[in-house]
Image (cartoon, rainbow, N blue to C red; front, top):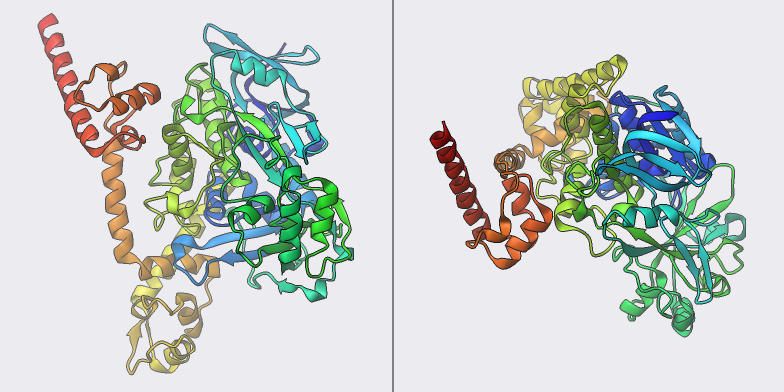
Length: 627
């Protein structure tokens, strides 16, 4: 009989991280997916990172995940977004070679002997006495497991739309949906809803007049997403920028009734922050133009991703509007864009460990929780994988606070607030975004990775050396003075006031416009740019960081105040009716979690504290009488 500690269903970005982290925690893992050739597939834009997402990718890496390592192996253009703004919103982004990324993911997974692979489609879960016992595939294979992680992405009853009349049952273009498993999970009492997302067309870059478009080159300085490895960089490629115009707007307006979205074929809610071109034209009718980015799909192909033109219009209409764009008048469309509808399970049905409240040992991660984006999926995969392994091995749960990682913000938002549209992370979702930066992800999460024994000795050594180097840079800046002769050329180049006498490097680096790295370089010291970045930010924002750390400690105190098990929320008449309904539905584990549920006011939180104290006193009194 096939028996594993953890079975992961799905080989996308959530599934691969769930398998990797469950294995790192010591579980024997089976990665079960419909097609082994598409493990790690980038179904939409072949890019990793961006606003908040780049930080999440580095958090996944800090815990031992594979996304950043695969990105480094596949990166064909890197840019640090928002360099002109504060460090809280600096965002690493890599355009990837789609094929290299997929192969890197498979290779990284196969380096872990605890992971096995099987191609197949799950027909039903095996559940006994309210907890999972395994799965059965469509071809009758029974696999026993103590924990199951469902990461089916858009495959659960997925349906592709191109116009009103083309509707294809599919998890993504070319792959069949998973219908039986969706129906089976629903039978256990979980609520199911529908969302939609979409992709733009792809084009043959040879048919585009690239010399007429705005060139977007990547950063020259090398950057590695992974803290543990420095893989060789592939050949770098540029992206290109162009714009829509009045002709495209007219074509879309004339054919709105043929759009699956506006013609009535789709009723599901889509992502507000990644609108289709139909949405852009309808909601911003006076906009003269919209940006269109042409991004390479890989080094071995001329195909390009047309970022900014997601659509559910018929293919002939897509080709028509593509040819109205400057530089694309004679373009060849290689793949038409499409919208896709799919099932998801509202995440308020989950514990903060991403385990289902309805079935013990059943975990959900990725788009099945109502999110969108590779990085959001990977983050959930990490937490679900760790907890699925912990459940199977009899070890404690893992929860990550919102003050310690964007991963924590993501999960806390999902399980407490739920979703009414596909959820995407932004830096603005975190009240501690200055603490949750991409440069300090390792420093924040290494203690947890070490405590759970997720890293090899070599990885731990590499991480410790990295953090020691960062501390040395800050210490050098605090202890070293620099002469006017060496400092003033740097200060002048930054339009900063020059000095007349030797000054501590740290004092000059505290000026917002002066890079610490350049000052140390002027002294003949050339620390790695990524290593110097942490010290530079810590010096410049010391006061703000101290305030945020104090606020995070107050949040931690509330999160440590546990709610009594089995508390009768409907009977707490001092709370508002809405508050009692929400608390009874979510069943928060701590006062901090309760305070973040929509509909729970500050006065409700205060009254809840009194109710908990009263219940605890009553319990103590009863125990005293009984003794």
